[in-house]
Picture (cartoon, rainbow, N blue to C red):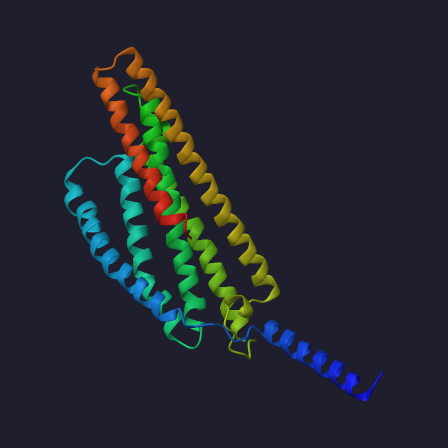
Length: 265
């Protein structure tokens, strides 16, 4: 082998080693040309979302207090709170595209975004299940899961579980940051071996929860459609048939809103 060929091979090996080491450290260069676009989009979403969610919060927690509480009202209040908190997390996400470091976003942004987004996903699932049980049982005595007490218990357990996951993640992340000497471009680069395992568990839980709620919504909508069709065949103009048709439309709205808001993520 000639000296020139040996030098080229050595240079190639060295360059490959440097590239691999850079990738391991999480310090590789990334394209940031799209950052201004994401900043504008998230800023607009924040402004619109904050205004709408503030109005909804005011309605449910102020005006709705005069009405008798129900399991549906409990879930709607929790969904409104989760959506409002999710909206408040958007400025932290915007810092991801403004700042040169991801410390703020990795410490608080990911955790807060996960907490409120999947709280919204789960509460939409509870609302759909509640509507479906109402359709199935009709005017009969409400199912035990439709009681106000059950709704409060389910809501509390949901928040406690999600808070426990996010708090554990934040504590372990702070511990990992003490041993970090670089400034990575991805949050995963901050993770220790133990935190990486927890991160995978959280993502697995998130994926399963999302798919379970999505499949449940489709199942509820399909069965509601079938019941509406059967009711129209028996009594096309009856009041029960009209109520089922209204419930069918409400279920369709839930499915569309869920897909529009959460499927892109």
